[in-house]
Amino acid sequence: MEPSKRTDELLALTGKQCVYCEGGTVMMGRVLRVDIEDDWGARFVIQIIPTEGFSRFRHSTTEPCAMWQLLSINEQGIHARLVNWSIIVKEDTIQKIKSLVLQGLDDNDFVRELIRVQHGV
Image (cartoon, rainbow, N blue to C red; front, top):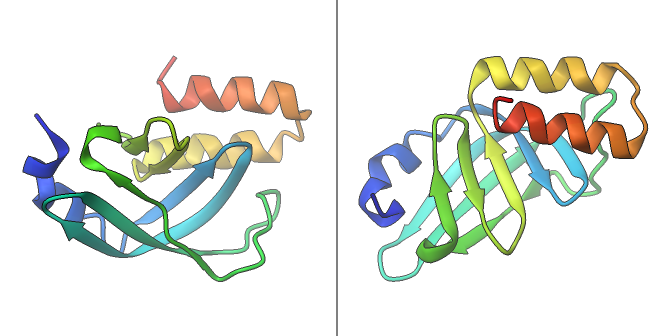
């Protein structure tokens, strides 16, 4: 189903704890707001929650957005192709990522394991 037809699912993310990933940056956060633009796509306002072991971010919020054609929604959360960001809201996946962060892996091993966790491998 096209993401634009799943606006209720997107709006239901408001208030949820999340892990926000963009490129090699991984941050704990909370979805503060979801703005839907029917003819374009969606914007997410993410409050960054500074958490030991996770990436640091100099702002208190970030606002990833993408047009409908780039968004995919699954049980893990939201992913945007081409712009390379994900909002992970599935609680057990968040816990796995927290555990992964605490392992102190080097960057290459961390990214490899993060991809496995995100895709349930």
